[in-house]
Image 1 (spheres, rainbow, N blue to C red):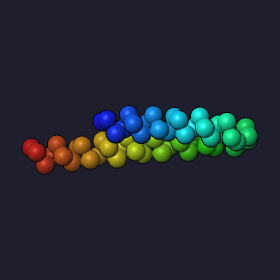
Image 2: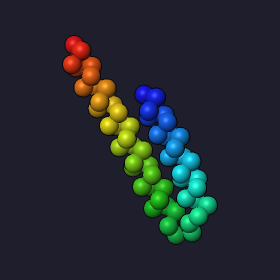
Image 3: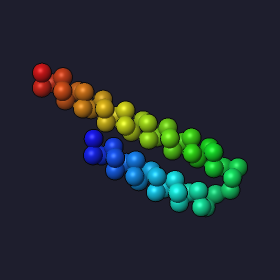
Image 4: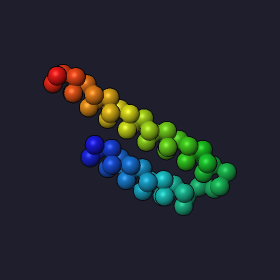
Length: 57
């Protein structure tokens, strides 16, 4: 789970950087894209841990 938190932190930093560089017309799309990427990365981490748990059992 540590990697998911690190990924969330990096996503927030990059989102803040992008917010200062883009206009407000592009910003909502960037926000949605970052949220989707973050969700996908967390789901990938959950899927990997579930596979490890099933192998151990």
